[in-house]
Length: 466
Image (cartoon, rainbow, N blue to C red; front, top):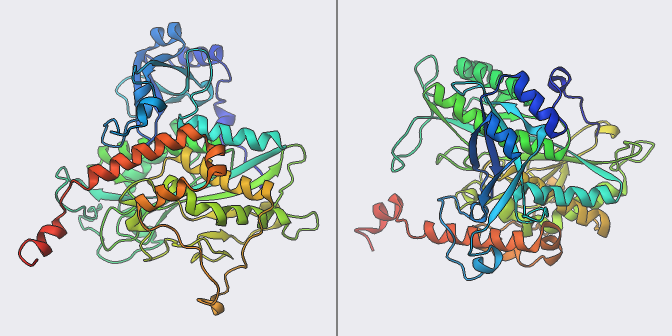
């Protein structure tokens, strides 16, 4: 699948080195720089520096512990954490990636944001930093003369402001003053209810060189989806990471919340991050999934075979929270198996209709709550194992034969998914053993914290009846 030229980059080419980055900051009269570090949960951590300090330091330092925190900001009480990340909490060296510099259009003064890579003091990449995990997988493709091409589709909800976490979320009122009470898939009028917010969002995206493309209204009340054009995996992961910041800010400016929770409201569909993927030859730019005469190539079925075999093992990376599994409960379009089909949205792996040059695979398993770096790395790693191992795909799903072929089901909760992650050493080797060990420790701690909370359902149905 060809990489579409970036029209924004043509107007405002991204800096390629630190000198060009400095020139860009001066030309744009930037006063402050937000130094961002994508950590395990996708939270934007880092520092804000005056531009002159940023220029002098050429980066920053942060303690190692930021890459091992769980979503509540706590350090996992796990026996292995001290050996995985030094309990001395040494400094990491954060190195700016000049190509990621962008404006912060909602800041009060001229401010830029730059994504940083994590390095050890000796210059080695930190193997458990999510952005480096994706780069590690991309290097495996590069060594074979291949290049993945991806296109994420990210679903999200707009919800009414709700500062009390004890109260359920509700659809937001639009410009009519009314909240949605019926299904409005693909409704243009439902989108126009939030016209001012969406105009601000697109303005933010253009100022930030985010190539946010098609926006649609999804099935849920206040649920929408943004599509990104096909391109390079690392750049698209950066864009999704930054888009989440921009959307949340735009929503707050209009008195709403924006959420990427996989299942924010009971009775409404979950939110996914569908990943379209193909692989091209770096020299010829030919799509490996198509033969020269246009028919599907064996590589297509090998890639699907890799996804089918390893997606269950990687599910904790695509569904990272307790809430994620409410989406994967067998309702709606959320997949609960790894069957594949042509233009079949009931399967976890879909091959959309396209011409041979654009033939691709859509992984429909990841939730919108997944870290984009981790989700892309895991999906590409599964496909890579299928390509190099020549893993044959199972037969295509035939709706007429439903129930006759054994389906590979996905784990239904986080503990089961974490257990399966440990049962695929070849996948862990690709992603990095230390990264996977830290990830499991962090997610296990989140599960333990969740189990300490007594839900409203338990109080309602158990208090006086058991």
